[in-house]
Image: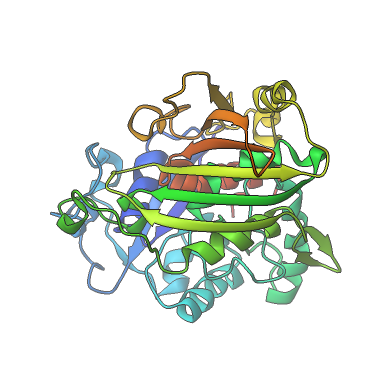
Length: 361
C-alpha cells in the first residue's frame, strides 16, 4: 500500500485502547490519526490523557503522543477525518450499541472490541481464521443502517480464543460435548496488579457474564447465514467455568471433548499442525504463520512462557490425551489482549481491507 488508511480509536485511553495504539504503531496498512474518549479526556494530548494510567510495558508511541483526544460522543467530528474506527469503550450496552451504529451511519466502518453487538443478527462476530465468510452479512446490515460504506463487525470474547481454534480444526469429526474451564488473566478486567492488589496470591472463581459468553459465542462463530442473519449452530453442547487467576496476560483453558466420529491422537495433532485460515492465505500483516502450536512437553503450554507465541497472535495447545469419561482432554492458551482483544480486532480490520470492505473515504 502506498498510502495508509486513517484510523480512529474510540475508547483509546483504556487498556485495550492502549493496546490498539501500541499495535498500530508502524503498522504497514493503517495509521492512527484520531483518538477519542470520554469528555473528561477531550482536549488533552494523548500523552496527557494517559498520564499515570499507561498500563503497558512499552512506551507510548511517539506518533500519537501529541494527538489531541476528541470527545467520542461527537461522532461526526471524529468520523470526518478517518477511514474506519476501532471501538473499545466502557459504557452501558445500549449506549455502546447506539454509539457504534451512529459511527456506522456516517459511512465509517466500525471494528468493535465490545460485546454489545455480538448477538445483533446482521453483525458478524469474527475470528478471521475460522468464520471469515460471516462478513458476507455486512451487505444486509448496510441496507438496514442506510449506508453504502459503513458497518459494524465485532470480535468475540477473549476467553474462547484459547480453545475454539483447537476445536474448529476438528469440526469434521463432529464434536458433541465440550467441558472447558478457563483461567483468565487480570488484564481481561482492564487491570494490573497495581490497580488490583487483592488479586495477588488469590483466585476468584467467578467472572460476571463470562460463562454464558464462553458457552454460547462459539456456536455463533460456527453458525451460518440464513435470510441475511447469522443463525447459531446447534452443536456441540458446551459448558464452562471461568476463573480469574493472578497473572498479567494470557487465558489458559482445560478442555474435555467427545466426538461423534472419534479421531486418533495422530489425526488431531495433524489437523492442529496444518490448520490455516483466510489470514494465512492472504498473508495478512498480523496473521500468525503457525496458528496452532502443539507442545509435546507435559508442562506446556505455560501462561508466562507461551502467551506471546507468534507475537501473541498464535494459540498453543498441549497435554492431549484420552480421557476416561470424554474422548480426549487437552490444554489451550491464548494472549487475551493481543489475539483475544486488540490484536484480534486489527486482524479483522486487515481481513476486511483485503476483502474490499474497508477503503479510503
